[in-house]
Structures are given as structure tokens and as C-alpha cells.
Image (cartoon, chains in turn yellow, purple):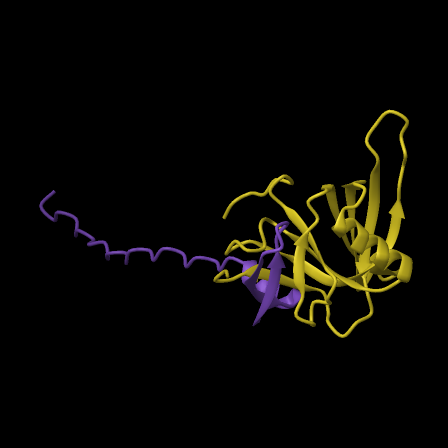
Length: 149
Length: 57
């Protein structure tokens, strides 16, 4: 067992979906990577209890990735194309290099829901990308890298 | 759990195969749960021998 820090983690995209023989490319222009994961809540309010209680519904998942805006970067161009055309791509967030045995992560077919770009006057431009699960045949899955290449 | 082969392309364009074990959310929970270790077996308690009081006292 070992802890993971953000610098070790890596995010990847694939133009092919996760069920279509994907070829992963690292989003090496990424800085902050943040995964949201929660369940919808249905509230039970009645006199049987002094407490509000809940039943849980679907998981709501998204990944926010801040990337450096690099003119001509192919990975950024792929993300931009997916956003402009509203087409799904593969997305993976891993604890480390996807070719290293033992690394693990979460991957899903994603739509690019946001690509906000603050353009600060005296700072490097970044793009705030948000990936959300797309309605495709494959469910989001947890993966562990096996024997390697 | 099932095993799939994906590909990885590095910045030089080299493509390698990557073997991944794919788990659903339920399978992942079972994968990371550590089984509770069995508690150590307690040694059998030896019966205490009760000494009869000394009748001569």
C-alpha cells in the first residue's frame, strides 16, 4: 500500500471510446485534477424518526482538469474538438503511469462539458476542462494496470 | 473482473500495449477491502486444582 500525491497522478484521453480499443495519450499539460463523486439523495421526512433520513440514488461523477493553454498541443486540440462537436472521448484518471503495473484509476467515456478559459493579464493562460460521463454502451469502470506491455 | 488490452501512445508516437484489469464499482470495493484477520486463538484454560484444606490444622 502507498499514498499518492497529485504530482504522481496522471490523466489521459483517447479519441476512441473505452470499449473501442482505445489508445491513451497523457494530458501532460494538466495541473489540478479534481474528481467529483457523489450520490443523489432522496429525503425521508416523517414522524417515525427525529432525524431526516435518506435513500441514495445514482452516482454523479465528473472530473475537472486545469490545463495550460499551449498553442498547437494535439491533446488540447482533441479535447477542443470533442467540446465543439459534442462527441464523446475516453477519459482516465490514474494514480500513476498507465503502463506501470499496479497503478489504478477510473475511466469512462466522457463528454467535455466545460472549457472555460480565464485569460489573465499577467499570467499563463489555462483552460478549465470538465469531463462528464457520456451515454455510451460502456459504464465507467475502475481499472488496475496488470502485467504491463 | 475482466482483463482488457488498451494502448498507450507517448509523445514520440510510440505505441505500447497496456493490460488492464477492469472492475465494476462493486467489484472494486471487494478488491480493496482488507479481510479481517482471524483473532489469535486463546490458549486453553488449564483446570485449577483445588487443594483440600489440611485436616490436621
